[in-house]
Length: 286
Ligand SMILES: C[S@@+](CC[C@H](N)C(=O)[O-])C[C@H]1O[C@@H](n2cnc3c(N)ncnc32)[C@H](O)[C@@H]1O
Image 1: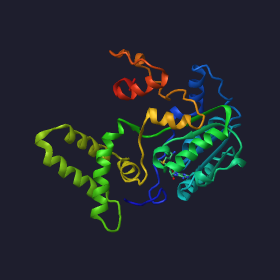
Image 2: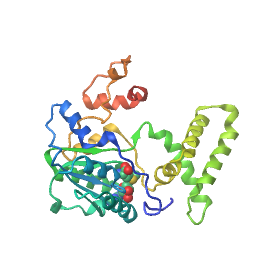
Image 3: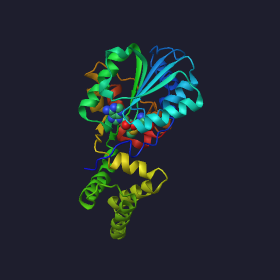
């Protein structure tokens, strides 16, 4: 497998509106919970990249205390420079491995983990859940994202092909975006007359790689050594082992909200309903 780090290819980090604590608190309130006050909240982001998402939170809540950690020295240094330039004093970014978080860190009101859970080993996944278990206040909210099945099976085809190609083709392990696209283009052209599902899928993947952020997808999704998608129900089983209780998807998915009620009785409890929602991707777009 290709070996590289986020220091070589920094991740394209974004401010993500639907994981801002204000949004998480609103959702929790809709579910009859009493989320911690935002004004003075302690907020932890694990695997924060350059911390730009946390920086937006710190700017919105000047009395809140924001702490972000990431083991990529380059990304953390970039974030620290931005913080200095903006002049914020309620946010700290540390270059640190998630496994080194210990009891001395105390309690947090909100813990944010975006784009990390599927990209780390099983032992680090356990540590992430354990941090949420031991470092959240009793009414605290954790946000955790992961690569989700069944949708990720579509990317998996591409990931397997590209990993094989790079592993066998280039002795120096260099990642070659141009050659990757050329390979894909050749396969598509060869299959073109058939216009089958496989060809359409590869065409979609090629389009994705050709976008301005295409290399980010190549480096960090297709070629990342650790990438472990899972089904929603599997994630919930893992989270429950750490005493964590599921509240909702941040997109607050509801079949009715699309204006198109599903012609199928999903039955079951909230978790079952949410699992079925992953099988109805169009219903999720609402
Ligand atoms: C896909 S990026 C996501 C970055 C950011 N959370 C975002 O969504 O924009 C994953 C991040 O997790 C960090 N990371 C992975 N394993 C880590 C570990 N064991 N300790 C600290 N950071 C880690 C990487 O350095 C990288 O910045």
